[in-house]
Image 1 (tube, rainbow, N blue to C red):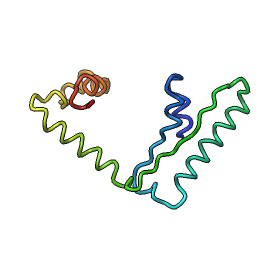
Image 2: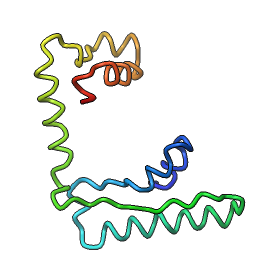
Image 3: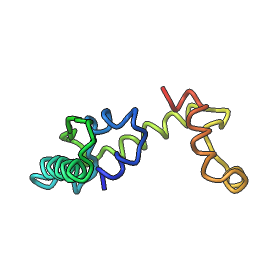
Image 4: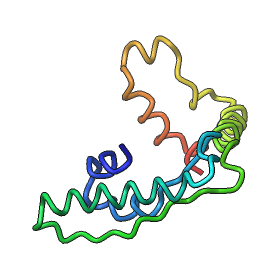
Length: 119
């Protein structure tokens, strides 16, 4: 799944994505999980190259496994919530009406247009 997600991304960023696979969540704390993910991505890449011999891309695979990754999602959510709370104008919030009118593209528009979320 990781390999297919990276293969489906823009060619300009694939190398960086292979070098920055970030693990988060409690299940990733299982012994050997980071090395297994790395081995699976490398194996998928090798299978792809065998089927597509004209592929000349050789991207090193790097799996980042922070020691406290079991709380990464919570930490990220608290940072986001804190930045949203500082935004008194409400520009970072999406109302139900906005979402129903624009669809999920409104999430991308608001995230990239609101500098407090990008910092």
